[in-house]
Length: 242
Image (cartoon, rainbow, N blue to C red; front, side, top):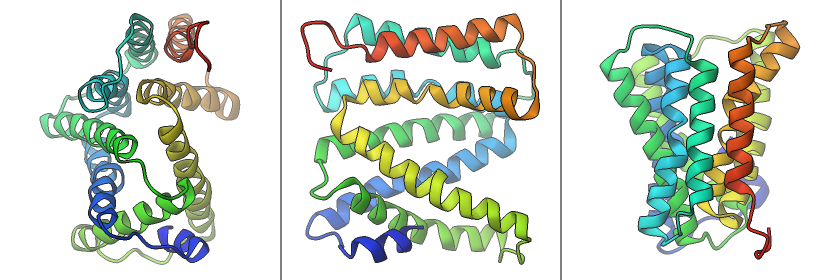
C-alpha cells in the first residue's frame, strides 16, 4: 500500500523526519494493527470496540498534556455521551474477558491516540498523501517480517479474496488514512477523536442496510447518544470559527 503511494508522490523523508516517521508509523500502523489483531482474536468484537471507544478520552488527555489543548466541558461531555452510546450499542454481547486481549485492546487504543497527537505536535512538512505514503511503507516494513514469522506465507488468494484485498488497500487503507491525517493536521485532536465514534455506528448501519439486521430500542438509543456526543464534541462555540 505504501509503495503504491510512494511511487505516486516520489518523495522521501529527510533529516529528523526519518526518526519521527518511524515513531509515528510504529504507533499508528504496525503497533496498532498488531495489537488490534491480538485483541480481535481473544475478545468478542463488541468488547474490543468498547475499549477502543475510550480513544476520545485518552486523546483529549494527551492533547491537553502534550499540545496544551484546552479540555472544555462541551468536548468532555460529548466524549462521555458518545462513550455511553457505544456501551449501550454493544453492551448486550457477552463473552470471555481474556486478560491479554483486554491489554492488547487498551494498548492499541493508546498507541493510535499517541501517534495522532505526535503527528499534530510535530506537523509533517508534506501533504497528507505523502505523509500517509511514508507511514504505510515504514509500518509495512515493520509488520511484514513479524507476519511471516507468526503466520507464514499467505496462500494463493481466490478471486473474492483478491477483490476484498483491493478494497482494503485502496479504500479502507490508502484513502481512509489520507482523509484521517488530513483531519488530524487541520482539526483539534479532541474533534478528530470524537468523530472516530462513528466507527461502531457505521458498522451497525451497514449491517442493518445490507444484512437486514434489526435494531432494538436500546440500540436506537445508543445510536442517538453517539450522534449527540459527536455533535456536542465537535460543535464550535458561536464566537469561534468552525
